[in-house]
Image (cartoon, rainbow, N blue to C red):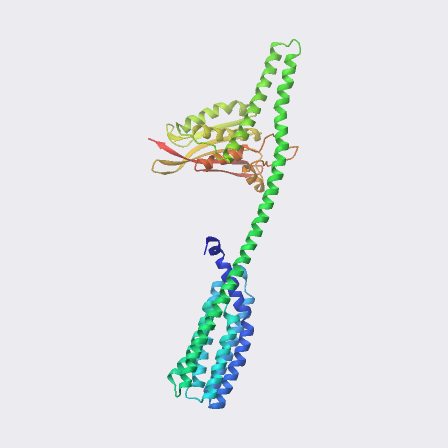
Length: 451
């Protein structure tokens, strides 16, 4: 049995249990009728209360099993208690089989040959009829058939007045072997059919999910291309426009500096965009390499604070950097990638925070030997993000706001790259946010502690 079949086995078992209970009503009706016929044969050959009490017990047990089947049909499928119902069915099946053994011994023992033969045929008929009813579960059929036919054989072997009785006992055992083989074949056919049906349903579901994902990816890429065309045109238009102004006759020194600054800013924006596209292509192609070098997290946070302080100050936002460990703590990881991830998170926080504070923190959250798990977080008091939009942040080509009226530009690549890089560094990235109350973005990575 392969892994997929093993995974389907509980579902197949549940279906087989349902099949047992579905056949229970017919089985118990036949059981009452045939046991009544056997009781009539026994009472006719040797009148007395024993046979009547036996049939009464058989009727009561059949009614109990009918009630059990009715309760199973009304059960709550969400409870997932098929195993308990399966065991309950096996127990009542065993009780029925043992009661049949009592009846056949009471009728056949020291009785004349016609009554023995009629009782043996009735038992054989019950076992043959049980093949389609109980054959779905091997154990259920064996619990039922083996005691009944083995009882017929033992009665004929032990109470063997003539050779024909020994032959009848032997034929009972041969019939038992054949019935078990038939039940086993039916079980195998049913299990294979159910497993195939479940696997087919699972494949259809997987194909449907793949289709939906493919359509979503196509829509997202279409939106991304529309966004990308805008993002590319914006800096290029700025560069070309300022270049034309520089080429038009005389310009003052202040104008020249202003135009050059705009060209420089547009060029940096264009370069950042191209770097994002290149990084994503490297990650998806599995060609992004993680280097190893020493770095001091406290020092890195100070440098990033100096880089973004002026930008935050111009927006009236307070930027705070905190390293919650020894200031001289040193680790080995890829400082370039760590800086790249933090730069992306801090830049986003500054972009989407109109007032308040931005807190950038770093800490060591776990250690095992020389290996340490580091966490860096960026908490802002910005607009926040709706819960249903959080997962979109880390998907390539996706943006929280794809409308033409969105407040800030962006390609929808930055955060997806952050998560991919963090995962390459044996970590992850995530976010918690509440609309109107800000967001907390975090990255975790594994590094080697020095000293």
